[in-house]
Picture 1 (cartoon, rainbow, N blue to C red):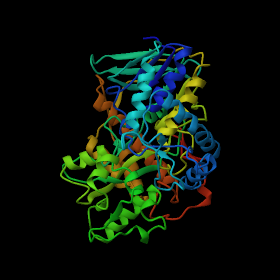
Picture 2 (picture 1 turned 120 degrees about the horizontal axis):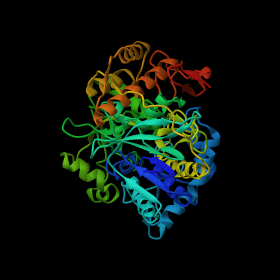
Picture 3 (picture 1 turned 180 degrees about the horizontal axis):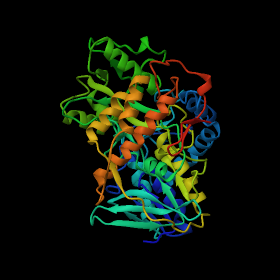
Picture 4 (picture 1 turned 135 degrees about the horizontal axis):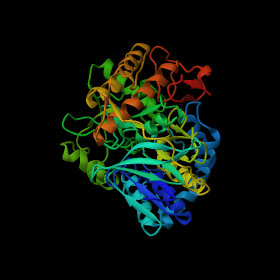
Length: 508
């Protein structure tokens, strides 16, 4: 396979970049699983854009910066919000079916938004509808080829210090494929599977971040992990996400005694920013000695719930919870990474020929805490910008033999549990130090024949270590990073963390 451009990941960012690249050469889009399995597919909450009559781009900008807790790249935020209306109009032109009231688009309000500006599709299937629309558009372009069942192993170094391509594991044949290209885009999605409790799909093992770090690329703000407050918490069910839009419709968090408790923690109550809600839930569970709290939607009729949240209602019903009659048990779960591979506003990383977009990238647009429903928008806007910038790349000659594969000797469950307990919602010096010492002292076993499961353990280990090191170095609490031993924000850390290779964590 010799494409001009290689896109790793078939979610919103990857597909939007591929469409942008299609007129400049041959584009190969590869996905680890099926071409429809990505975090984009599971995005329920919606996509934000200042399109309603009572909204302004400037207000969307203010809300994004406020949620980012002092760490947003203001230039990136401005690019995002200003491009949002056109991005939505483009999707509609390609056939996206957003929810409407008559002929007018229907806008909802979600946590930390000052206006109703969040569009949904089919109630709670927004990510699926956007991904469907982009995939359909991509299939009409003959220069785009899409392949599933390819697990990225490593980046191929270029002779002049850039990136010449990637090595892939073909899961059907077990063979290693080397694909060279003029430019490579990492659109590999999130890293939620680093943790035991996550709303992310199985493919979200931080592959792009890990591969970029091994190649020497800069990793930015990786300690900022957003935990979604409301994941369904049943012993026999997956940690299914219960969208923030439920609280936008008036859902109330209650403790084991049935008391609404969020007013004790934040003036916005149940619509406070996600990091605040998640920590408040943890504190309330500790105070009441409970394993979970409950999300109460019983003020809404079954008909309304089926209409507005069909996927959520049916999923909960399948696991024995009728949301119209009973509150749902919920617990925070790892949901979104604000940090990732450091890029500029056009997706360029610190390595020539290597780009990143979507959740795998870090432009600084989300700061320390992502505003609800900005992630699908980020994938669209920065995926398109990366695709446009990649068109001018000339490519690098491959250099050097591949490094022998080794995998840390640890079970995946133990690895994820370590991250959950020591690098989760609440952190401290002792726990982070324990995690780093454990991760640093693992022996490495050679991997004679690559397997997806072993490659994923390798990536989870690398990303968990990056998170722990970043969290230990950031001696403050900000956004999605909370240290009980440093519970306040510290102006000395109003900077972005940067990790390069085995060097120390730096702040810029």
